[in-house]
Image 1 (cartoon, chains in turn yellow, brown):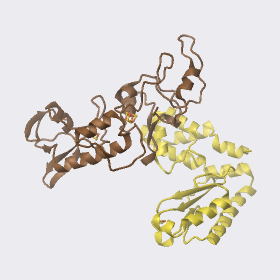
Image 2 (cartoon, helix red, strand yellow):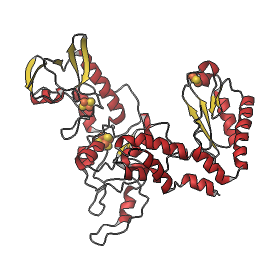
Image 3 (tube, chains in turn brown, cyan):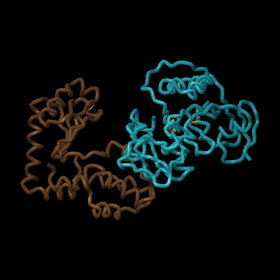
Length: 187
Length: 225
Ligand code: SF4
Ligand code: FES
Ligand code: FES
């Protein structure tokens, strides 16, 4: 089912992790920075990578696990190349975030909190983003989209989808490289 | 030496002691939960709160982590302190009211029931086990995972940790018996009921049969047996 590219994302290469570790000082205090780099490269924290981290820096694996599960910025499950974050804060909820979520779930064929099997899309909810007047809000790598309605979700979906197919044209291995070298952080 | 006053009693203690230690050494009782003589102070449960007189009025501090100061004036039994301890005890009762330790602790501050509802769990997240494994044993096989209401004590990835030497120190320090020795019978030598990804085989030296251990309870996700 999974292509080589996807496997490479899920199964970190020892040399890749080493490169990340070599960039940092390797003291116990570099833990967060290392985890951030790994998360950035793989879009999640592969278990083997965490084990390698604990072998290299003087922090027990249990502590690495504790930190990795504490911060929302880290994920222990693979995440899709495109992430939809729907605000479910009070204001957005009242303004119809549920409709937006339902529409996205239908379009993507996944439930909230899940990632599609092809590792393309992840659907998440977030708490108040501080822009309640624009609710309901959806955040993607395209930025913040406010006042979302079902038809606007459909449009956004098409925009994000076209991004994906551009990359796909370049072939699967290129996708992985693009993901690995992509340094432009989303908004 | 440092001179301070606790509940009107003038006390002299060594520098570097905490208010809790100063009080206990002088026979003044302060209730505690997460504090353990053998472990570094953690300041997690807030049962040990006391009132400190400052130029800007009374200040509530956790006595287990607060270092003694020259001339400090401390009160351990004011109305405010009593109220704070009660709320902490009520919350503990809501979570682990079925455990004798929590019942006794709550009773000691005059609480026997709770207005709150929380999912029942013997573990009160005092972190004694985690700290004992790290500080006393020096292993660090378990840690606190997740956060907020999802917080649990767990080995990495919730799989029996290969680092665990099965010394049962965690069992020893757990106040509520959330980690128990019950699962250890003569042939089942592990305190943890976390599932393991490795199949265990019979030991050729002793009579330890892994399959039987597996039957005892390898399904649980966290420490609670
Ligand atoms: S298992 Fe016991 S010692 Fe460990 S955190 Fe829970 S209550 Fe405290
Ligand atoms: S509730 Fe969504 S931005 Fe505030
Ligand atoms: S004993 Fe001081 S906070 Fe728990």
